[in-house]
Amino acid sequence: MTQPTRTPSGRTLRSLSIALSFCALVGLSACTTAHQARTQRAGARAQQHADVAEALATEGRLEEALQQFALAIEENPTLTTAYMGMADIYRERGDYSAAEVGYRRAATLEPSNFDAQFNHGLVLQLLNRLSEAIRAYVRALSIEPNDFEANLNLATAYLQIGEPRQGLFYAQHAVELDTRNGMARVNLAAVYSAIGRHNDAVREYQAAAELMELTPELLLNLADSLGKARRYREMLNTLTQLVKLSPSAPAFERLGYAHFRLNELDKALDAFGESVRLDPKHYPALNGVGVCLLNRYILSGRQDLESRRDAIRALRRSLQIKRDQTRIIELLSRYG
Image: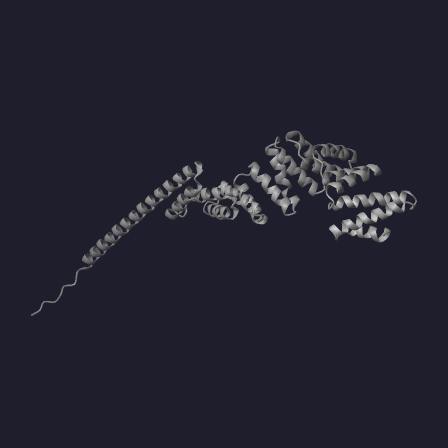
């Protein structure tokens, strides 16, 4: 007779279950350890590629460096330094679009990495993607609020998008961080000028002039702010210095304006005329010539018809260059 199969006791079944669970745990642990070992080896290879890439970049062997950085990323797609290294090379080459991709990836991988956030903002600004640049700079400043360049660049970006008031704090803070930096002073002056604080702008431009080499742009901006502050004699003195340093159509046009505001009509006409001679298409100077001649016509009791005729000719030439000048159209309608 066939003997019936014995059913294991409850204790025996539990022992078997524990044994199987232990084997499974041992297998899982072994798999995890193997995976960690592979990851560590890949990480080590990636770092080795990155180190070689940095050495090659230092030697100026940029194509080889890019290849090594790419190999590093292939081994470890989360290696921030490799993305940064590639982006640095692209930025130095002027390939800002490629650099932006690398910095963006680095900034995403390490949100607390100041260099990644700042450099991402920098290339976005160079690409004229200003709203994105502002957000990147704000992220950078949330990490290092007292970084000079981040404050300076953020203020500049706000100026570029026509929101100078938003940039005022950062422009002021940049000056506080480096009071001897002429460019920070110029930047703050530009912000003050844009929000109508012209005397403050003059102060900052003058401070910048003491800290850096005088440039035509700096003197022209200073003169413009002096004019808007109605400090015409100082404006005239600044522009007299400018035309000696670097004669140009804009400089002589501003000089003509200063003479005009000081009721020096003949000197104003001479300066406007020199501006037109230097650049026949500089329409603000043509407007200056026209206005001066119309004033001469009016002061003659409207007898100097030659001045009136020459004035109309100059204003018409100006409109041919730039048509949307409401004030000039009104003058031509009145006197033409």
